[in-house]
Length: 198
Image 1: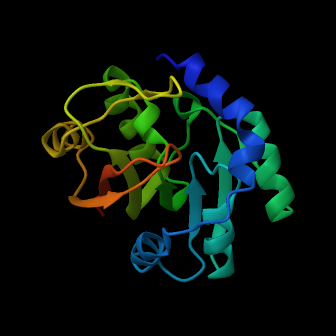
Image 2: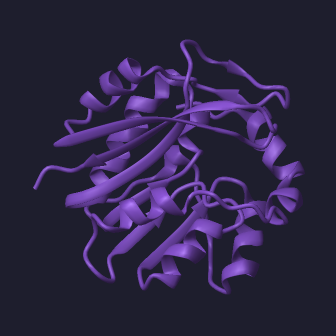
């Protein structure tokens, strides 16, 4: 499984800028995700960045394990949250039924297309039966790079459904939404919620 060093290098360079961002517009999706979980559920966050989403979920009483693939961002999240934050690349996830939920906001969109089905299988394995998994992607038709040289898989809804089908999820809901990103440009987002079969 490959990783894109140019994308990781961007987040290494921009870690302090990401940590200082104050705007926050994701509470709607987190609340919907949390409503699928039992009280006090264990949540693994992939690509936690500076820790804002983990902070939100901890504030709602959930047991959150934040992780990020960039050591500098993991350190920024540690400072924000006052708790250990592991450095974890998606390819290195190797757990079996450890989490009630997995939250992966705007991070799996950097996984090379050919590797995403395998990453989804790893996430599926890490969830307990009946567990919920959220991920968001920048929509498109073909992979490419943005102005910062970050790699994106830019999937269509049909591509996502095909990749998720390979992991045998019990239920996959995809919603499309207009939004923005770090580059300040209008962005078409796809939000995916999947449930692991009981």
